Image (cartoon, rainbow, N blue to C red; front, side, top):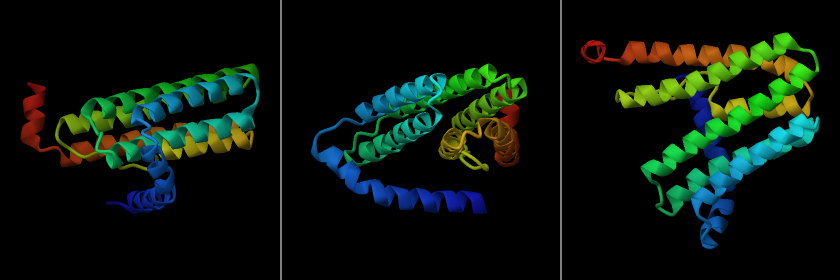
Length: 205
């Protein structure tokens, strides 16, 4: 495990410790994890609408809150022993919807500002984001663990929110384009390195 992954895991553990009482409250009030998943989608769509309305700071705050629910739903599912394959599939799929809505809204906002290069960079960032998720899913289908790289969804959310609340979306678009594509490349290289050659040959037949 690399330094970045160790730091990420440590921070995630700390954050989960802080959020544990909230998760316990949800469990005590019989809240289903899918309710939090749906909440993430609703708040993300609201954040996208706020971007279009040029309410960037509020969009960042709302998107961060919705993304926090995305972390809570997994914690709640584990606490209540309600982890299911479909729940994980639904959560990952809706994460792409939430991220896609935000990317689309920000791209629209950048276009209205006449920042065509930033729009292009954001499209590349969206491609990098999708590739980062896809490479992990494809690697897991091959029996490999592939969750490394410089930035995952959590870091992408933080960077997007920082760009929104500081009104530095142009700069953040280029940063995300570089980091997401680099992360996807890191994962591709990791799979190539760890995939047994006999498995690779069988999948090419």
